[in-house]
Structure formats: structure tokens, C-alpha cells
View 1 (cartoon, rainbow, N blue to C red):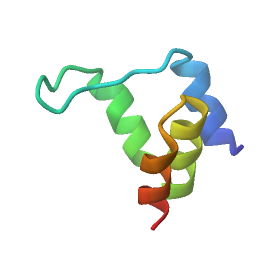
View 2: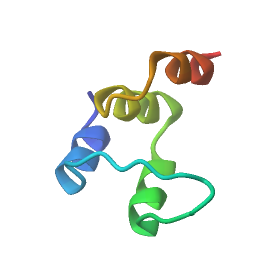
View 3: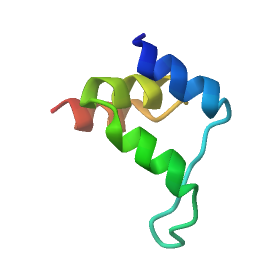
View 4: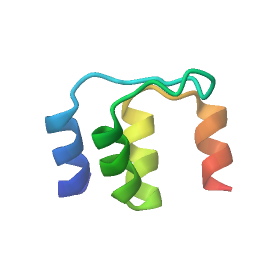
Length: 60
């Protein structure tokens, strides 16, 4: 786990799931997540319990 992923979890210890339809969420959190590399993003999603099929799709 990289230092940036650790920082993400330090700042945001609770998972956040957002439906595209409502678009509700923390824009600061989204910006930080988007600044992570693809592998770091996948690590975050895995740690937050994202479904394995979504992780597999992202890896392809």
C-alpha cells in the first residue's frame, strides 16, 4: 500500500458509494481519489469492498 493510499484512508476512513444518478458526494474526496494512479485506485476500491467483477473490469 503506497503512502498516498494510506493518506486517502487516513482522510476518509469510511467507504463512500455514490450513484451516478444522484451525483452526491464529497468533491474533495473525489479529486483526491482521481489524483491516485490506477493501481492505487484499485487498491482503495478493493479495501472498500468493491465487487470483484468491477475490479476485474478495471484491470482489463
